[in-house]
Image (cartoon, rainbow, N blue to C red):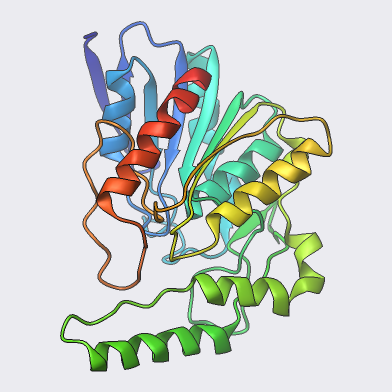
Length: 285
């Protein structure tokens, strides 16, 4: 295996792994944890791909929560990867898939977008602050967004508490129905909040589990595909009926289970979906 140089990105708080001879650079974005995806970068580097990951909220000088994050946050690392490598890819999971799709619409130099457990609309930021505000800004203005249905979220929390009271094992809340409820309740805002994925010039690969308990990622992946198909653009969608929100690509460690919310799926199904998706991801790398 080629040697890999690992560099700490001090300006943006992140990591860059560069294998000898790499021709593709990938920006890897985490979900709503905001963590730096070092393990995924190392896996990609083992396949000869340069991979960078940055903390895009919760770091010095950044929003403490996943809300009002300037999309310009990613400009410097994208420009650096673009200057170093022939091919530029953005790979995001969950909240990071939302960012990856948005970035694909803004940066024509991006050759491919991979969205794992994606959404097809921009959501309100993850914050208890009300009134709700967008997750993202562009040139200082809020990106149009879909609000959360607070009543449906409360119902999900109460249902979880009731189930936990009846079970010795407890039960984490699933918010999938709350996201579906928001799509219905704020249907008039969906058109403006929908990510204009037809503007993504490069390839798009989406990976989603039918057992996703956090949000309806298969529904989202199909919505993206339909919108792009209407513009004669191809989109690869890989799904597994039993996989959940946390898709595990080959060679990756399994993330610890969340202590706050249900992801759905199982380790076996999550790994199986990752195995199915890998050839499609590798093809665009």
